[in-house]
Image (cartoon, rainbow over all chains, first blue to last red; front, side):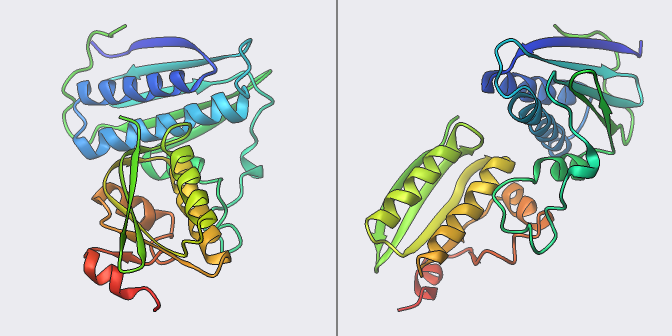
Length: 148
Length: 115
């Protein structure tokens, strides 16, 4: 049975970032991704969660991060949403350009794009939702029951 | 597992043995404080041994870059030793592999610092 989805609403804390990362790794393993892809998916989720908690919600205890995982039988689809001021793709500098190469920050979204097959941003009112998609290369191990 | 760091002196080079995760709020702060402390003590030849570092996120990468530029701005050298495949791949895709002086062998790394 494809199309299962599990969602979490989490506080804007680093602990929530770790929860999202760990859950992503578990979901990726359960979906049948190999170790390298499990790592890529969990790292992309970690980076997106850091953006949501730190840059979006600014650790505001009144703002939440929503994370959902869906296995539709063809892909693992993860959405991460915050309630912050909103992120605009055109404002994201290229971390590979010579003037940015030695900057301390600004690599998170680049890494997300490097690790996932599709990355989409949606501006919310308020906040930002990012959707991360990783396609199954072969036969998925499981597209059945969700874990909570 | 959070990051652990310890230092030792080898032929005038400070070797920092790191293990665990260098991530936002965990290892990043430890690494930053460690490098600042070494700079404050006048150390200018620093070799970061990443052989037991299991995970680095973008914050950890940023901290490595910051450490590199901080030491360089003080007229020193900071080099990396024993990258795991995951860390190696991260430095490759972020185009930082050629920025850092990366070594696999500790003795060769120690010998490569300016006298």
